[in-house]
Image (tube, rainbow, N blue to C red; front, top):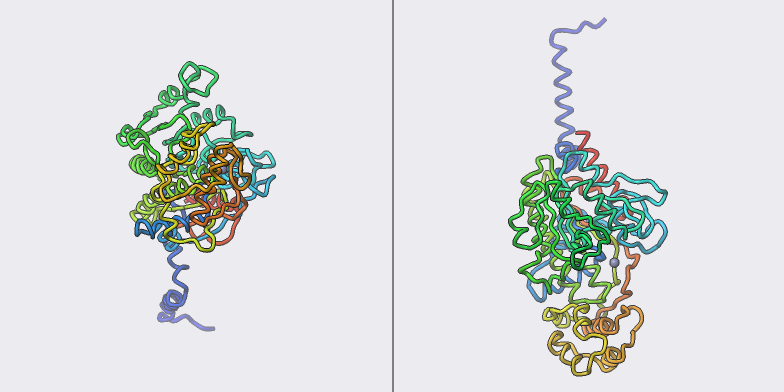
Length: 466
Ligand SMILES: [Zn+2]
């Protein structure tokens, strides 16, 4: 029988300490630091480029470098410092998704049919990222330069069979009462007795939101002064103006809305917040094959992401920054022979193709067409065939949209910057995803858009169980 001597006891702790020291020296660092980091973010910032593609970002990056001698925050900082991923985007019933099905996948983690908001293809109503965050006591913000009831923001806090059921989406917003709603779409917030409303009843949602404690703002100046705890900002009757056409006195930019949101949400939500910020203008410009508006929209989106990046730099141990697209629109790329000099021509175009078509009207004269090009498209020449198309109201056919003026301008700019559009609609290209901060590693690699939702839901679940 071996008796334990009085000097035997200390040997075990000593051996354990030696083993621990050995492990510390040999285990890979990420394993050890992972345990020390918080497992769930307090601040989740989702920046959605609706209709965005990596190809568009690359053109904007080259443009920024050539014209403004600056980089692009998304590619040069978020993608380089964080994790990069791609998402497949097919919906439950189509190879090419729409924004409703894509946002349902990203907000609720399930495939939906095109046109359906917040309901899975099997009829299940998923818990969304925002609903789970609310259970954690986190603040919620939705920002878009589309109408605030549009499908992408709607899928984060509402559930409707048709994305056009705006009445029900607004009622669900009112019930959920997110801390912040900023965007366009005042047309469905006004009773039918008011001018330019889309409502067919006397319900007055702005009054109802005010009754729930919301501070209502309608201009850029009012937004600057806005205080919480809850803010409703409606800055346009429909979709807000493209950045390069915006009336800076009245409408805030996307980055100004994001700045106000970060200020208000951070000041008032001690348990953190989830902020969704969407640039609809990227999708809208690509649907019109409007390359100049698209570049200006991507640049404004990038300025907006930069605010998120700066916020992350202040709170790196508590923030998850996500920059993502829901689907590609247009399939845009530069082709052989494209040059920096060609790209520079986009700088002086300050009129969107949609506004140009409005200016010319349905029966434009030759003189009016030439004047429009000379005044608003310096550096571009309208070829005879496209001039004829505008004059005789001939559609060009795919990939250009139906309006002859829009199509001709799209073809003119594309030819002269050597760009190619695949479509004036959505495509099935996998989309980019960049993630930085707490939990970012989950988003790397090639995944499905439902995985995006699963990861966010899992991170927010972890926060609840902490
Ligand atoms: Zn679209």
